[in-house]
Length: 615
Image (spheres, rainbow, N blue to C red):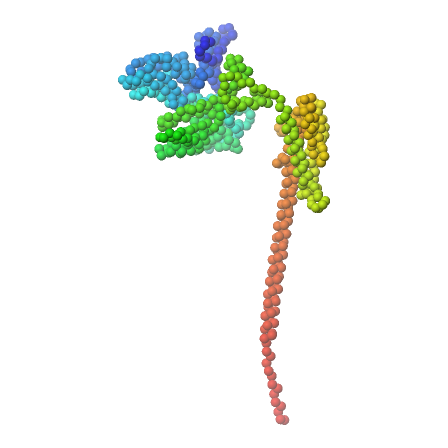
């Protein structure tokens, strides 16, 4: 191509057969793949060649076919009548992108300049004549380009703003992993209840769902009175109510965040209404709202945007609303449309990915590598490259072996192992002089952990095919006091002699997966992997050895607490009986005391013997 010429990317199909029927590309099984590739057409001139429509826009632009929610634009010739009453016809039929339309208008000499509008979601025409003799008018001469671009207007102003041209961000071929700023969609289940009250669960855990088309197919296969499709603006799923409208259409999660990730979670506003999962969020601003109120509403809207208030230091109106994407790179790109409120927003920093040329600074021969962050991973195996600043000159990255980090890792392993053994010995010991016993003295679980740890570090590993199959061969051995000792010189010699064998000693691992249960089992492994496996067995929160012992101790504590409660209940019952007996005895003693007092106070009567008769 010529220098400076636009690069038009389109597919071209050539019919290699002789004669036969008309050369045609048609959609199969309801797929939109051919349409998305721009080849859903017929060889009209019968020359055996189908040249598809443009599939890649100009740099930093959008395809016209993706406007109006994917309906596109029917181009032809438009007539621009500027405010000086001069009419100019502009042929837009060759345009494939918004940038092409802007360029053709600006090259027409119509006394009008074209650019993106303030929100960046439409076209702005600005009269540059400075005249006011007539209105600024745009009409279609052929095709419907002016109407489709929403610039077919007649205004007594210097500008025509198309407003939001509804670029299609989502199509049926959109990967689920690309949604939500690259965060993707959790593949789970959600339940839909249609307006007749019938419910069904949509299951996206079957492993076959990769695109929006797969989700639409799953939803529509449930036999409910609904229809799922891309919405008219091309920015999300639409769940249409095709039922009686008796109840409000409802979508609820079933143990996941899938519906929320797809933007369709919730209930229709009214019975008979649809649920529109548009990724466009509208924030309602009241006349009395302050900048702080607006920032709070944006932050509470649930979009990946952080709104803050900054002070630019100006003497008049220093406070400004600042919007920042919380997702890095081009995935965090967003459009802010103030709805005509006059925010006069300016883009200070565009969302873009970090780009570096690998192998050469010449774009023609170097390999372009992109990243959503300023870090490049996996360009060179095992190497992470941090990008510090932009540069026109090449930067040489030297990658060399760093044995010191490996040595420190092994030294840290030895120190950590000895710390574990010291902790075990501290609690599993008996002091003869003080006759103090450790809290875990004689505990079989402690002994088992101790022996299993040492068994791994001292034994030879038959799973390894290299020359090193024991830690003692690479400078790690059991020394005095049952602690590991590290011989750095011996380790470096082994590393220089056979690095692969040393690495295998610590990291080698082979596994197999049970096809029925999906359980992964280690079939052979190095010492490092075996220690990791042992630690998993010991510390597993559900079935680990330590957890089992803790559960056993807790069971004993619970049993003792139960016995204590039972004994306390028996003691309380015994106390109550004794108390009752004591009270009864007190009462009896009180009665005896009362009777004794009564007897003591009793005085017998005096009797006089009668006189004898004389006779």
